[in-house]
Structures are given as C-alpha cells and as structure tokens.
Amino acid sequence: MISVKGLYKQFDKLEVLKGLDLEIERGKVIVLIGPSGSGKTTFLRCLNVLETPTKGVISIDDETLDFSNPISNKRVASFRRQTGMVFQSYNLFPHMTALENVMEGPVTVKKESKDVVRQRAEALLNKVGLGDKLDYYPFQLSGGQQQRVGIARALAMDPKVMLFDEPTSALDPELVGEVLKVMKDLANEGMTMVVVTHEMRFAKEAADEVLFLDQGVIVERGKPEQIFSNPKEARTKQFLSLIEK
Amino acid sequence: MYLNSIFADPVKLERLISIAESSLLPLLKGALFYTLPLAIISFIIGIILAVLTALARISSLKILKGIARFYVSAIRGTPLLVQLYILFYGLPNLGIMIDPFPAAVIGFSLSVGAYSSEIIRAAILSIPKGQWEAGSSIGMTYSQNLKRIILPQATRVSIPPLSNSFIGLVKDTSLASTILVTEMFRKAQEIVATTYEVLLLYTEAALIYWVICFILSIIQQRIEVRLDRYVTR
Image 1 (cartoon, rainbow over the protein chains, first blue to last red):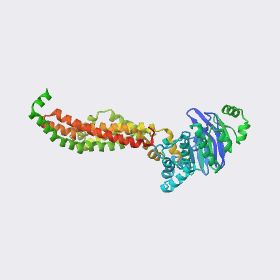
Image 2 (image 1 turned 180 degrees about the horizontal axis):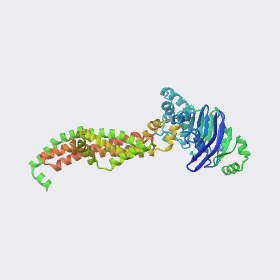
Image 3 (image 1 turned 30 degrees about the horizontal axis):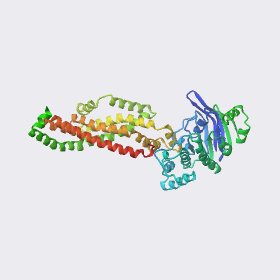
Image 4 (image 1 turned 135 degrees about the vertical axis):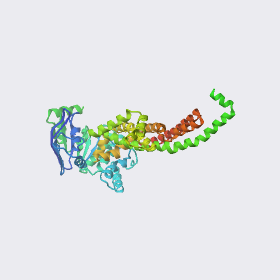
C-alpha cells in the first residue's frame, strides 16, 4: 500500500537520505531504528511531505507523488490527508481542549458537522483512555495523556497510515507504557503503522518488520526476532549493543 | 506665587473653579466624539493593515515582502506630525482635499499598521514550528492553519504590546489638533484662547487622557486573563 522508490533528501549540502526503496503492505507495523542522524525521522516526515524529498517517488494507495517535478500545495494536502502523524513533542493545539483538538481536523478540513464529529471524537478519546478529560486543556494533562490526545487527533481524520515520530521520547519513563499500550491496540486492530522509536520492547512485541537505518540508507531489515537476536550487518550489531547496555 | 495669589483671592479661585466646571463638558465631548472614535477607528483599520503587512513580510513572495518593507520603513522613518501635515496641508497641492477627520484616520491607521505589523510578525514567528506542522499533518491549508491555529495563539502573545500601541494612539490623537480636528486637546486650546487659563485647561485635559488610559489598562488586563485560560501560570 505504501511504496517508496529512490527517495533522496538533501538539506543544503547535507545528504540525509540516499536513495531509499521500500514497500509496506496494508496492516503491517514497521519500526524504524537507527542512530541519531541516520535519517529515520526525515524519512518518516517525507512520507507525509512535512519534508519535501529532493527526488524520488512515494505512493500511498492510488495517490502518487513524483518529487522530480514540482507538486502543487493542493496535491500535497490531499496526499497528506491519507496519513496521521504523531509527534515527539505532541504539538497539541494549546488553545483548544482535548475534545476540540480531536474535532479540529474533521470540522475544519473535512467540513463535517460538529455534532457528528463530537460523538466520534468522544469515542476516540474514550478509546485512548481519556473519556474523563474531554474538556481539559493540554497544559492540564500529563505528557502521556497529551500524547494520547495526539494519537486520537490523528485518528480522527481516518488515516490509512499512522506515522509515529519518536512518540515516547519526550515522556517520563513511567508514562511510556500508557502510550505504547494505545499503539499496540492500534496495531492489533490492523492499522498500518510506521514508527520511529527507541523502544525496543515495542519493536519486539508489536512490529512485523524492523528496519535499521544508518547514514541515509536501509542497512538491514527483517523480522524483529531476527534483527534483535541475530543481526547480519556489523553496523546493526554495533548499534544494538550500544542501546542494550 | 501663582497658587498663593489664587488662594489669597476668593474671587480668582471661584472664577477658576467655574472655568474648570464649564470646560469639563466640552472637553469630555471632544474626547467622546473625536478622540475615542478617532483612536478606535484608526486602530481597527491599522490592525487589519498590520496583519496584512506582517503576512506579507513572512510570505515567500519577494514582491509582497518588498512592498511591506517599504511601507514600514517610510512610516517608521518619518514623524507622525509631518505625515499628518502632508495628508492635510500637502495633498491639496495635488488637488486632493481630505477633511480633517478622515485625514487624521488615514494618518493614524497607516502609523498603527506599520508599527503593529512588527508586533504581529514577531508574535506569529514566536509560535513554534510544530504548531504549523501539526496543522498541516491533519490536512490544513496555509490559510486554515493561520486562521485556526497560528493567529489565535499569536493574538495572546501580542495583546500586551498591542495595548501599548492603542494607549499610545489615544494620546497621539492630540496631534490631530494641528489639522483642525476638534478633539479634546483642540477643545482645550480653544477654551484657553478665551480664558487664558493655560495651566488649568491643559492639566484638566491631561487628567482626562490619564483616566481614559487607566480604564484601557484595566480592559487590557481583563482580556489577558481571558486569553490566558489555556496556559499555566
């Protein structure tokens, strides 16, 4: 369902992605790991065009963007609507309550009626365990709660793919579990997910496939058991030994 | 000396009190019908100009940027008094006659637009990039993002400096006296011309300005409290 071909991204003189190719099937959970600066976050942000790739082709279902040519903002917005994004720093709208955050996309972007959206938004917040926090502003919520609102906000747009950019990296350790649980539930429901994370436990338990990126290329990919217990590449081994200390 | 002579002479004192009393109504009328409308109308038009100018400054279109820069530079680089003189006394040379009140509105609006555009630009730039990205990530267009996410937050940031501008503007309207707008200060001048009570009248006018600005600061505080409901203190 997602297909990436020959993806390059350059910031000024710094080449961050050096020709990535990848196919992701519907319903799969892909975890991207790699050292800082490996390009994993940039790759994720290219998937919803928050970063514009220098060249390459990305398809999600039947929408295809070829970055060798200029692309209109309208096509980018339409392409983007297929994906939901969860940010490392949550990026909730601070001037809106939890409920308003979740309702914002469907109401403003899809022009759906508020009453219908409200019910769905409440259900989504219930699902992430925040049914009792509908009218709280982000500053009144813990990091873990904010991130769960962030997940509900992304889900409200009915995305085909959910992208997670280090969703638990900014959280206190005791709050990581509640966010990972919501993500695992999503995975079990069959959501297609691409996750950049340092949570190896999540990768082991929920990923269908783990990709190890380093210096802008996919060094190794495979089932989590294989990557973690029996990595083939030296660079993968070295990285895993560093984080498992 | 002046005070001694007043308090030693009951007739003089009574005359002063009666001038103070009889001038209060004309001064208040000047404030209510000219000073405040002039300030409020100019501020509203000025803020619209300021938002447009700020958006032009942060846009990626070089032409828009250039026009906005030129406008801000021209207005900030020349005295307001001189601008009012050009509008009212200068333009007639080109056959453009503008009545005092509209001329003052144009002058003050342009001034507010230029100065406040910098406040609004800074406020927009102070909103973290992640807010733009979050808006984009749920499919918002640039204008939706601006209207729903960025400007509401930028408003909160810009209320204190914009209140400053508005209070400054209320006082600057006294400059309109020089182009024949009968606002409060000009009313005071007119009464001085017949009574010669310079200190009394100008002090009275000053006190009224002060009261107006005091009330405005209270309104500012209320707005700030209202907009601060979503941030930790």
